[in-house]
Structure formats: structure tokens, C-alpha cells
Image (cartoon, rainbow, N blue to C red; front, side, top):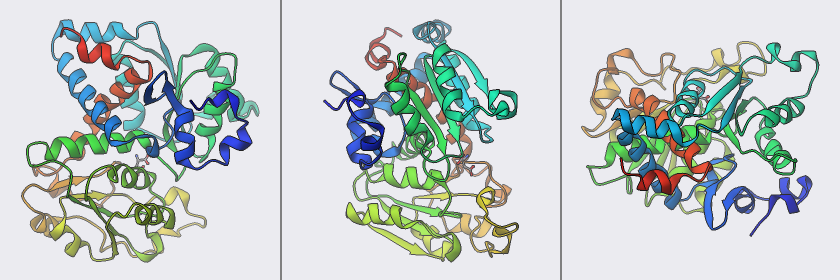
Amino acid sequence: MANITEISWENFEALSLDEKKPYLQRGGGDTMPYHTLFAQQFDRDLLERLCALSNRIRFINKSKEGALYLKSVLAHKRAMLYFSQPSSRTFLSHLAACQLLGITTGSVRDAATSSEFKGESREDSIRTFSSYFDMIIMRSPEQGLAEKMAWELSNASRPVPILNAGSGKDQHPTQALLDIYTLVRSFEEKGGLDGRTVVFCGDLLRGRTVRSLSYLLTNFKDVKQIFVAPPALRVPDDVVASLAAKGVSYEITEDLKAAVKVADAVYMTRIQDEWDESKGESARIDTSRFKFGAEELALLGPDGAIMHPLPRRDEIATCCDRDPRAMYWRQMRNGMWIRAALIASTFGLEKEIMNCGY
Ligand code: ASP
């Protein structure tokens, strides 16, 4: 078995994502991640297990006895939520997921209130958290930081798991998990997710949720992916290359209406202008054709799903909000359930919760 304590950081960093995967697992025969860093760690079996555990937690939590049981399972653990980039849903749903499982939490949401303000490096800050907490849930503008810290903390005297809650423009694995959970639930009684067509629209270049979800979708059979974006915000080459390598059918277009007509799900995203290299760069891009409104709603099939990782600006008109196909509100709550399932699984509680008497 690959052991992360037996490989140098330089050699680990140089591995491909697929090669890194076994180093990040719980071990002892369980392929579930110990550190959750990128979407490529999840295969179909793990996705199905997490969806099943989410459903189970959701059900158990309905009764007071069940909720109290859940609150007892990790009451001996503490988690640190370290978010050095803005967040509403990811922060709150992780917090709520911890609360569901009885985990005590601490948080830093603004480096200006921590010793980083005094010049401490992020690495040193995270090492500090590992002295007091049993898990670190972190969001950072730095692409490789979560991975570096996973290696560092595995090799420290007190190893604790890292859960990547958004790493720069790169990945947002737990968002992708909740997106998959939402899609699986949406199509559960309509023949499943295999064979579906998923349309991504908006800032596909800098949207980390797109990279993570695009990858997770490759675990399903014959799911076609259509990428709709202005030329300046087109889906990055690495995403396309990974689809091509896996023989996944995809299309790149600027015609949202045509894509919606054949879509089972439409995943809208906002313009990620926080990454602009010069002031007003994004505002100069014509994004008017990349919005979902009444006309697109009329073109979407009756079983279609409209999704968005949120926050939304004007990519989805508010007239869509009450339509039964609008899944973006459900995505939020699904995020809490699947994050609870992931955290419970990280601590090895999957079987116990699946088999409990509630
Ligand atoms: N909330 C998502 C993220 O953190 C999407 C977004 O911000 O547009 O990446």
C-alpha cells in the first residue's frame, strides 16, 4: 500500500493525480479518502457509497433519537474551518455537517484576525491548527496548499486529515460531490444519471467547480458534457484533455439555446472576476448570451435540472426560481448531507452509521 510517510514531498508532488490517489486513502483496505483534495480521488463505488450514506444520515436525522445518535458519533472530535477566501454555503454547510455529527468546531475566516497578520506563513498557521484539532477543513486561494499541508501533516507528529473546501481556480471536490448527489437524486426515479447530457455554462476557465464536477461525471456511463462559454472563458485544456483521454463525449460551443434543447442538466456559473489580472478585464467580455432566463427555461425538457454552485449574479433569472426544475436551492442542503457523509467516512464511521438501528 502507498504510504505518504515514505515519500518525499518533491516525489509526491511530481506524481499524477491518479498516482497520488492511493497515498491519500484511509488505508486498511478502505479506498475512501483520508485527505480529500481533488475529485479524481472518487470512483463510482465511492460516489455510490457516499450518496447512500448521505441518504442514511438524512433519514436518521429525522427523528430526535436519530439526531441525538448522530450527534454522539463524533462528539470526541474537533474540526478547524480555515477559510482564507470568502464563502457562505461551503463554510456553513461544513459547519452544519460537523454539528450534525457532534464535532466541536473552531474557525478562522479572515487572516487579519490570526497570526498570519503578524507575518506567519499559511503553512505554519495550519500546522498550529493541527495541534488543537482533529480535522482541518480549508479553503485557500493557493492552488497546491491543501495538498502540501496534507503531506506535511501526515508526516508530522500529529497527523490530521485535510478536507479541501476550494483551492484557487483548481478544484472544489466537495462541491462536486454535492452536485453529483443532486444529479443522482434528480434522476433517481427517471432512469438514473448514466447516458445523460450535462451542459456547463459561464466562466468555465476559472470556475473550480466545473473542473471537479466534469471529472466526477466521467464515473458515469455515457454522460456527454457540453461546454458553453465566451471564447475568453472557454473550458481549460486540461479538462478537455482528461475527457478525451477517457473517451468521454464532449462539445464546445457558444450556443446556449441549442445546448439547453438537448440538456438533461444545465450547470450555470458566475464570472469569476476575482481572478482578473487587470481591472475591469471580465467586464469587457460580452457574457449576454450566457445567461439562463425564460427563453432557456422554455427550451429545457420537463425532467431537466437547472443547477448553480452559487453565488449567482444574473446568470439565472429569478423567474426560474420557483420552477420545479430549479435544483440550486436543493444543492445547498444536499451539500450539508454529503459533507456529513464524507466527514463521517473520513473518520471510519461509514459502516457503523449505515448499520445503526435508526
Ligand atoms: N461557490 C463556488 C466556489 O467557491 C462557486 C463560485 O464562487 O462561483 O467556487
